[in-house]
Amino acid sequence: MPKTTKKMESGRPSDGRSVNDRKPKEKRWQEILKAAAEVFYEKGYDAATLQEIADRVGILKGSIYYYIKTKSDLLDHLLTEVHNEGVAMIRKRSELTGTVFDKLDAMFRSHIEYMCRNQAKTTVYLHELKALDPKRRESLFRGHEFRDEFLALIKKGQAEGLILERLDPKLTAQTMMGWTNSLYQWYRPQPRKPVDQIADHFITIMLRGIATEKGLALLPTDR
Amino acid sequence: MPKTTKKMESGRPSDGRSVNDRKPKEKRWQEILKAAAEVFYEKGYDAATLQEIADRVGILKGSIYYYIKTKSDLLDHLLTEVHNEGVAMIRKRSELTGTVFDKLDAMFRSHIEYMCRNQAKTTVYLHELKALDPKRRESLFRGHEFRDEFLALIKKGQAEGLILERLDPKLTAQTMMGWTNSLYQWYRPQPRKPVDQIADHFITIMLRGIATEKGLALLPTDR
Image (cartoon, rainbow over all chains, first blue to last red; front, top):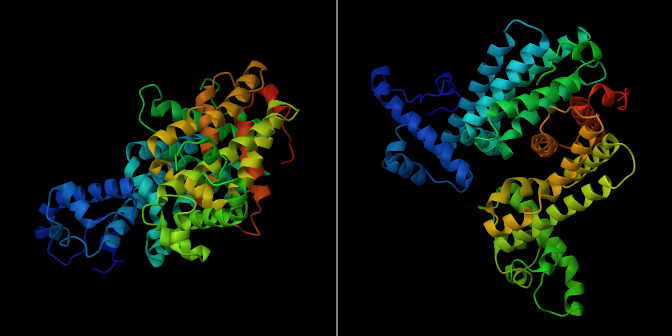
């Protein structure tokens, strides 16, 4: 299977079979991706085997080869999926109406919720990018789509006098994305620490932290 | 070698030999720890072997057994060292004179500099704690020493009206530690992004982000 086809980036195997052959296999493919995320998460990519992933799904190892050729293909599909889901989610939020702070709030909130709901595959994404084929990794990040959505809003906020002029926009976008990503390191579902409360803390500190005096006046004072 | 002896926590092997026997081996032991950090960093703990670590140092694999019994002992030494160095560093900064912001500034700055200067072993610490013997891990974190240094300052700042009352102090300490730790994910030494500039951005956003109006007046306005 070629590793850089369009079909692959949609998260479905491009094995050359007809759509009818593929359709009923879609559910199984999703099960395999989910099991791969779990096994990579628990053991790390290097130590994980296709055998364990097949066992987790309850299929023969040979059946996995209907979908992919190598363990590396599986990682590629998984990371591409997380990347594309993340970019689509952030972009949707950045198109909302409102101030730059409203948009950044919505973007960070959806990002945080996604990470907390998809902890295994988010962790694999953040830990195992280095294991991805370098050309694929480069092609995934060439667009800087993720960072650029934040970057554009920070620059807009600076132009409007809402965000501190003295902050470097690229470094600030990078910093705040890194901070949001860091949640996967310590977040564990806990009734006493709902995701909403964590998101409120993150967003309060980040937005107040970059705001000018004029910007602070636009931010909520009750959370 | 017992895994929980005092000597072990000092970062030296407790092999029962006399101090004179051990001394000339200290340098070699430091080389082994450094090589272990590098190999764990590059391959992940699970995939790493004592053979590779020995090769990196340029000694026979058997020589490593003078210092430790298992790969797990090596991880234990390494993580204990990072933990103890981190706690000592933060505690020293928290004892400085100045406002809570001065102390938090110094703590974050030294933490960030440590991480950037010790990227391999910091990454191993953050990625591989889960691979540590659960009892050892528990004993390492039982004191919550690291978090509690930040927590005490945040509570003090709230009592003084400098830090927002509505922020949960524990969650805020956890959040800001997590953010500082996140640097290991993307920091790469670059002449165009000196560590100082990164630290300035981190500290500006974090401290302004938690400050009340009264607190903001104490913060620098030029970086």
